[in-house]
Length: 237
Image (cartoon, rainbow, N blue to C red; front, side, top):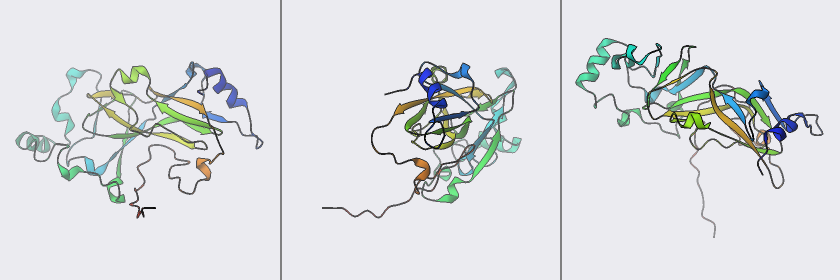
């Protein structure tokens, strides 16, 4: 069953035998507490995988406050890269080029570039995937947490997670967001980017922060992917 807003607040005050609440949200503002969720906010740092950005291209553009002040050449670090794009748009500057692939099983493909989101806003490209994070640090015990986009975020065609919106009982940390936009879209630091929900658990606990196979417990800020292992599985009869 899903917790209501008042029950979330109650669980933030309820403590276990170790005197630790079931739910910790820091920072917390009761104005962000909804009917059955709590609003989460975007931090001021994004990461992109270095291997996915063509040489000479900017992964994002500082917003100047008006669409009329921007040109396609703003996506390029220098005019020579822009001219090269005009001559070879499909040879170098398309995400369909296998040169910009990600190998999930090789750590070197997870090297990142940091991008700061200025107070005036940052334009994201629909051709780039961004790792962001929530400002809020959360801890969850005896409950199943998960995040999703707010309806206003969805109606601006901003996707804030790819399959990774589900958390775990025992998870402690900020939430990494896998952000993708359908159009060129402006984002701002501290904007409301999603909601966290809580459901009750059934069965014996296996807390995330005590599982030796957990990769992301305690993460702070946008966290790149851990290398996916290739398992040697034997078929059981």
